Length: 379
Ligand code: PMP
Image (cartoon, rainbow, N blue to C red; front, side, top):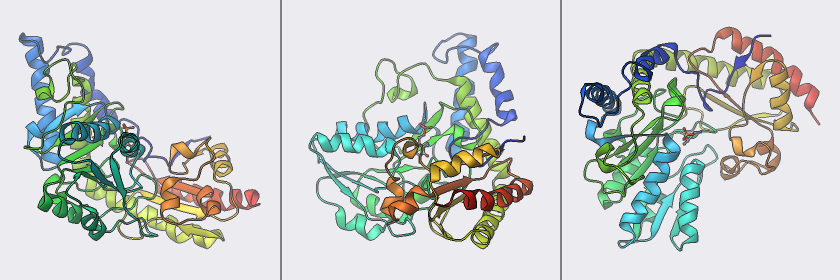
């Protein structure tokens, strides 16, 4: 049986061209970029070339990019790095309640240490209101965090408006852009981001590699101490092959993005149109227009999402409920709760995310299997 992948938001396969570009950096070009000899210089050049590609892609300067292990690290770096440096200035953080756990857990940790945390409200479509950000700011506010696109329901936030508010008050603004980079245009200047996190494996690069943008002039405590790599902002020998792979993945996305956005949003719209025609008692979650081109998210009445995923898997279809942490733990997703879904609809969630290798045939197969499976599972 052919296996069909509808879980690109969780991770993507590494593009064969990316893998090929990385290869030499594991064997003949294996040098440590800090070494002054030819091997080191060669690695250093590859690292700096990769940095320039990342910077250019998101509208930044090379020196504003730090290579790291991914967005979990970037988000932890942002929250703890700002808190550590600015704790003398204030003790208040503003976050959207539908941030990824790698933002929320560090913030909650600070909350336990006595920091004040304002959580924004979200509309039924998953949008925050920039006016509420403005109203929540106090003299004590030292960080605002609003993600660009939500990993569960795909809603794209009005980040640029929040960026303008943050900049006017000179408050550091963190944008988790993990689900957006490589899929829709992302420009740090247009967004008004001071800090921005991304992970290569969400856009056909390798896992365990990411980049963290720190706007020039923004002061932040280093994430790792013990070396002066990455201009002293992250000690440890850099993952040169990973950075090369990240840059290659970006080059491919740059070439393919317009075409992929058009194709994926067309296939996604077919799901939005045909699933409600073929199945009763289904709602579409997230914003209808302000959303990622590759994300379709549904809730089915009287269906247990975990069983739905297992049944789809038995038919060769890999999908998700949207957040890994809901699997196994009997807690409904925070995001679905925040947009006001009942427990029944939150537990009956299905996230279908499309990508580079999704075809019309995959969509047709899914549309054929899903109604049968739902019928069999309805309680
Ligand atoms: N933020 C968002 C929105 C994500 O979707 C993810 C990955 N699921 C992360 C952060 C963390 O990325 P990584 O696992 O690559 O560190």
